[in-house]
Amino acid sequence: MSHYRSITKQLVISILLLTVVCFDQQIFAQDGKALFQQNCASCHAVNKDLTGPALAGVEERVTDKKLLHAWIRNNQAVLATGNKYFTDLYTKYNKTPMNVFPNLTDGEIDAILGYINIQAKAATAGPGAEGGKVAAKETATDNSLLFGILTLILAIIVLTLLQVNANLKKLSDEKEGIPSYEPVPFWRNKAYIALFAVVLFVVGGYYTIQGAIGLGRSKDYQPEQPIYYSHKVHAGVNQVNCLYCHGGAQDGKHANIPSLNICMNCHMAINEYSEKSEKLYREDGTEVNGTNEIKKLYSYTGWDPAQKKYANEPKPIEWVKIHNLPDHVFFSHAQHVKAGKVACQTCHGEVQNMGEVYQFSDLSMGWCVNCHRETKVQFTQNNFYSIYEKFHNDLKNGTLDSVTVEKIGGTECQKCHY
Image (cartoon, rainbow, N blue to C red; front, side):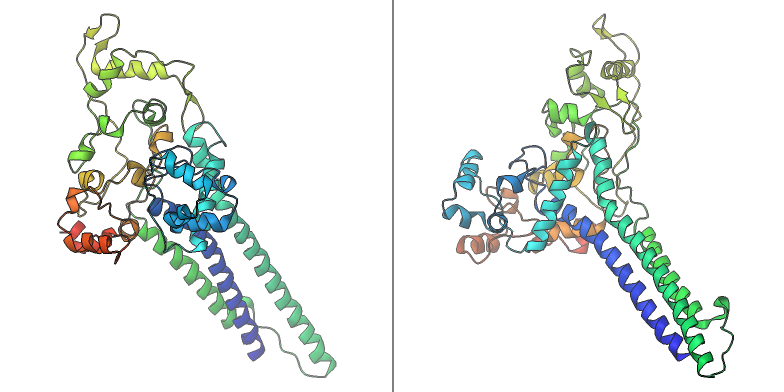
């Protein structure tokens, strides 16, 4: 019996190690995305220039990985060496200094670069942002499937070897004249029952915890709206500023859904969608007729394009809300957009590349807290932080190179729960 216990112990350890490896691969695949959002998304997009250049193909433009790592950690030190590429880049963007990230490890930087490569490839994998999003999801789950299959194969091999070992031991005992005993059936073997219970507890506990943590969250939620409104066309192709439609984001707690008057400021004159413009696709890949969607807008507003006047009674558009926070959480858009100077893409993803908008971030407490721990406050020319005299002096004296949101109380419970 002790022999079986030894084998069972080794089997349990092997399965647990394989489980840890699988989970570790999933976590690593997500790290690049989280690190990108925390450190890069406020100034950079993957496929579009923002405050800084688009990051797609950055490893092709800077083939020396050590130099690229050095630039990310301390760009001013690299500029001091006179590197032509980075000097030209610095000049092109009006000599606006990039934030320094001395705390990022090589592994974390490589994870960010890996996420950028995945997103850059996904952008060309299908029509519109939806196709890219699906391709990115498929790429991210390939390793999980591979390791799951590998775990199953190894488990079958281990069980087969256990059976072979039992048969060989039985033959050896018979040859030496040692009386053999009938093996205990599987369903009565305490070692197997204990092994099954441990595996069931670990796997079931993991998925139970993940399910409980995810209650009330709706990451990637993308409902079909009454009118197909493409942010890619408006904010991307036509460069409509986010605050033109969502003015409340700068001045209040809520970003607000724009009124129909805002839409009609443009669509009194724009009554059809040109076929030469960006083609529109739904999540399932079906093409959308942009002109018909404009006609839907007219039916809600009561506008008659032929008579150039409001001829019918207007009715509200029943937009489906996407982003929600629990009632016990305080969040102010103005505090982040105006005071914190946080780019919309940091929380909402690359909205300028989306057709129908989906929830990009899980908006969990952990996600917010990690952002506050990593995000550096823009103290320069920002009167909202003038009261922090000590931090201003420390920055001038070189005692601090940056101030994170955490240092000004961004992780205190009462900041969001009171």
